[in-house]
Amino acid sequence: MTALHQLRRRELLASLGAGALAAAVPALARPDAPRKMTDGVALIGPAERQARLERAQALMVKLGLSAIVTEAGSSMDYFTGAQWSRSERPVLAIIPREGQVGMVMPKFEEPSIRQSLSVPAEVRPWEEDENPYAIAAGLLADRKLASGTIGVEETTRDFIVEGLAQALPSAKVASGAAVFRGCRMIKTPAEIALMQVAADITVAALRHTHANVRAGMGPKDIAALMSDFTVAQGARVSFNLILIGEASAYPHGSRQPQIVSEGQVVLMDCGCNVGGYESDISRTFVFGEPTARQRKVWNDVARGQQVAFEAAQIGAEAGSVDRAVRAYYESLGWGPRYKLPGLSHRTGHGIGMDGHEPVNFVMSETTRLAPGMCFSDEPGIYIPGEFGVRLEDCIHLTPQGPKWFSEPPKSLDKPMG
Image (cartoon, rainbow, N blue to C red; front, side):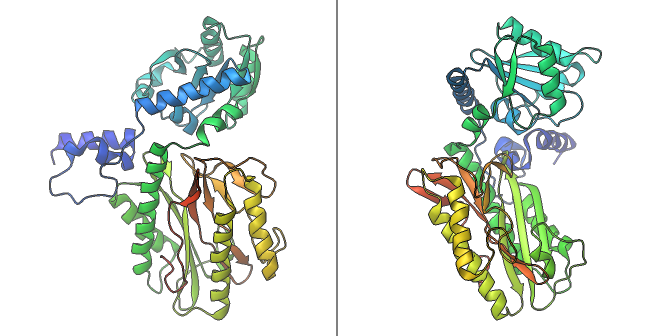
């Protein structure tokens, strides 16, 4: 490969992400390069983004909002394609109830941000000595929207919300969650297809890694096996959490030294990103011969996963999924509720462009399940001082009910399925 081609590959990798590279620049791949699981993946295109904007504008009209605003992050990417990291310098996307998107950004960052912007937009840059919120207010005033209700994305930082409120004294700055959730919670076939590829890669990486785990390995050794396989298949690594022995009893781990040895539980919670969309899959196995107690807990969790899946029906409250699992676990003597030994966290969370998105499978959630929603299904059981088991697969809801992105394993003897 020439130096020029190497440079172009690096530039495209930075702007598109590893998961998109094979589909975006097949001409730069060597003829003898091995195929990747991301080859041929279809990225989110202009027509899909335009449909998102139209959906948001329809919701704004229905809810009486003049515009919605989001700062850099997944919601900005969702609507505009613009990819940027958050810093003390605000980068804002302003979506009016009609007309073109407005973008407010630092003047010196404009060329870089424009590289990923994929919808027509009116760009209003601000210099270092200017007030970015005044620039945003000016854009809204020119659209005759500065005295309406402006909905702000729910993860937008407080100093930005306050800056907008001060610059828009005649407007009401309020939560825009109903619009952002109303769009992002319902995944389209194009989004689900990207999540499916991400799940397929994570499953393949888990199987590869499990086959190569050896006594004496630590979490970093196992995570490296996962990462190497994931990257080789064209995806970007999101996380690889490896918990060994007693550490598996603590859902997000322990600082105690962990080494694989005979009879130890190994819990792997892993995910990757393809085309901007996440996977999140957990598998638990025993290195060597399982004890009767380990086998029972694994089987209880496997059934708990199926209870959640069966409860995740269109029209049901999201909280009813969590309640169904806890009722089953309590019948076995685990819990009650969130008490240990038992299930100390929610049964699942929304997933899409972010690994964790609204809403959750948690007891108090009243949102009704609808086609296109995507969730993790991960009702683990944790026994402090001993071990924990978590089996996690994600689902998407169809008009006929839930469907797995990845099939759960059926047996501790075949823990990767």
